[in-house]
Image 1: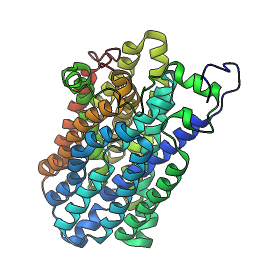
Image 2 (image 1 turned 90 degrees about the vertical axis):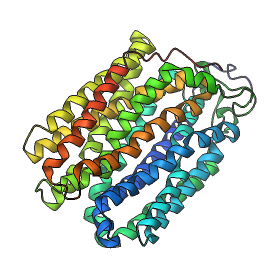
Image 3 (image 1 turned 180 degrees about the horizontal axis):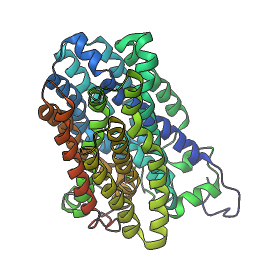
Image 4 (image 1 turned 45 degrees about the horizontal axis):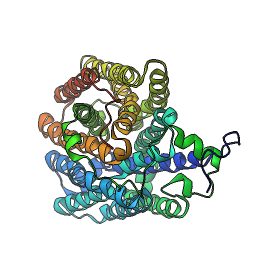
Length: 431
């Protein structure tokens, strides 16, 4: 292909939108797979004879291996490219999603979820790497918002889909097999269509390539392997550490929503259908929050600069999220509790586009590994959330015992709010 600046006035092709579509579906599949075990937890516990504490460990097993393999998988993506690595990731986790159906006790379920987490690790950092090469800076916030909207739409519709339709038809084991097959189909299509560099794709014309590369960091020499990953600079970057703290708070709250929230809703005296709908409500609220968060942070960044634009979007969102979680512990109506939990969960997701776009800007050509570092620390919150919640609630799990776990989430959201005051996306790592 000739120089990307050769035909600046030509009409741009739209191949990058297909990439966004692939990643949107990827996000949906990952979160359907993650959410289904929380929704099916009461049935799994009854079938396999698991306690609350054992189920908490099952929830956390995924995030432990996910955190361990997150950075290596992202580094692998920098070595060989997201096309190959995402194909492997999606295939692996889809297989182990289906194998969850074969669990026959606590140990087998934990081992399967550990392997499931190891397989899925690196999916989101490699998607971030794709965006850093295919999406110009002016579109990154909204594209991240679309990406997260796919994840949260899937997590939002999964509870009623499973409880009202799939579980009665297939049982809990059949649900895992059904969801696993979706990933296999995606991996085949991705491998066939995608290319790591937009200039290598036949659907990208010179005008689109010029538009993409005008504001993007372009690698030299393969998949960014001409230069080593600046591990020392990453470890010393206060901005990456603060983004990681934000990710910790976000993941802690999110994993409560997709693991224990369906169980909590069952303690509020709601009917079967209402409980299922309310369990998915925070993720339904997250869909417009994701989209608006992406558009808002891009608009603010264009108007006030990256630092202010990202900080306002991220900080304000977590302020609303933190206050909403505390309010949810003070109201007595089950419907109001569900509403404020949904507002809190949705507001925390409003900040995701700002966080991941900031990580791309700080990481530059190493955005995949930088986002993996952020997400790995975030997964520590995800690991702790189900275990700590089970410990605080106890075996009986009455409605009153859930107040402290919700307040812990609210406190973490407020810490994330304060962290945004000090984050500067302009402080790029050495390239």
